[in-house]
Length: 111
Image 1: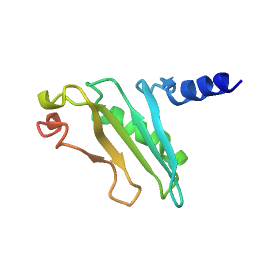
Image 2 (image 1 turned 135 degrees about the vertical axis):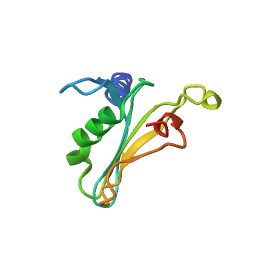
Image 3 (image 1 turned 90 degrees about the horizontal axis):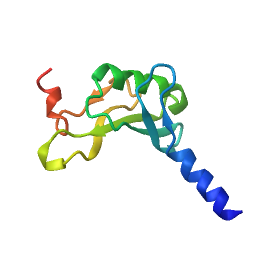
Image 4 (image 1 turned 60 degrees about the vertical axis):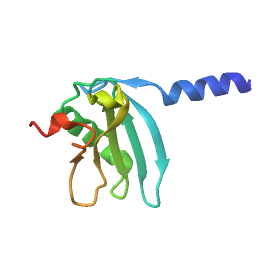
C-alpha cells in the first residue's frame, strides 16, 4: 500500500501539463510561503519564448496568491551549462512584474 501511495505521489509531481494552449511543463515544486505559494514550473523546451513564459506565469498566478511566487525554468543554451534547467522568468508579485534572467539565458540580450 505504501508503494502504491509513493508511486502516485511521484507521478503527481511530475505530470506534464499542456492544457489551455500552454506549453508543456511540469510543476517541479509547490511549497507554502507566509501568505502564498512558491510554484516552480519546468519546461524542457529550450525554445520557450518570452510570451509563453508570461502565459505560464499568468496561468498560475492565482494559485500562487498575491504574496507568492511563480518561476519558470527551461534549458540553458549556454555551452557551459550543457542544457541544465535554469531560471528563465519569475514574478514575485511585488509590483515589479515578470523578470527575465538574461544572465543564464544570453539569448534574451539579443531581443
